[in-house]
Length: 276
Image 1 (cartoon, rainbow, N blue to C red):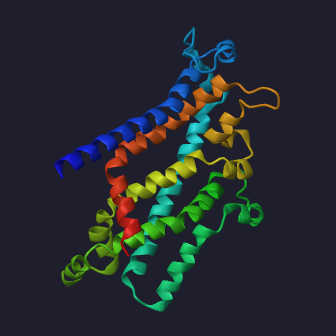
Image 2 (tube, one colour):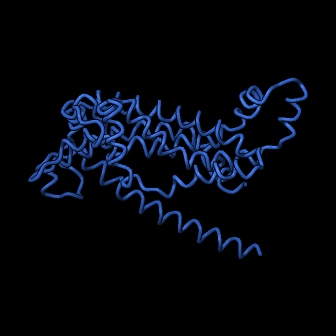
Image 3 (cartoon, one colour):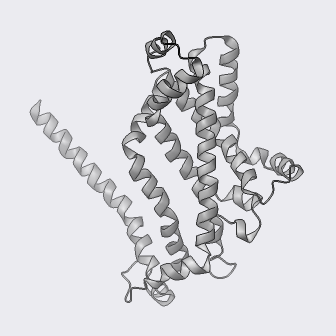
């Protein structure tokens, strides 16, 4: 048995090393391209640069106006995540605790949103936001992202809530807490793992999304990071050094968010998807 375990660990380690090399290869290419001159890039795309052009980052930051783009992306992401966490948590709590057919119908109504592609609703959404005068506004895009991410968030929250013992809430009820206070003081703090998972998964979707800002944020001063990076592309020429430099700069906030919340990420995904 010990020999079998040793072979298994050796094979697992070998697979992890191979997978690590596969993942490291595109990252290495990404980093090397960011510090190359256009001549270096045309001469040898995958070789190390002859001259390290660290100024590419500063030029990309200035040319694409990434400071404004960072601000726009941050505003949209923060308020969208706050809205989806607030709405999804409050909606999932009665769904997880109630047992009536009506509540189950609402649950499946919310979950059905996962199966509807955004492309199917683009034209009606555009007409609706135009009537509400929300085109070229952060509010319009935030409402869209909240609506898009609610179904999966409610699914995770409901599954996680079903794994929390009801005795905790019954004890709070005996002590005189109402349902709202019980949820805010007892249940909500226990939702940190699944909330971290929801924040990470949805922040990836919102931060990297290209289609929604392209359709609903047409003004230059409202551009998000993906739209700003797109300015380096043209019909006959693409400035790959600038594109890759901007991508690296735009990825840093997501990387920091994941590092801060990673200890809760797997726990929240497993707890929210398996239970219930």
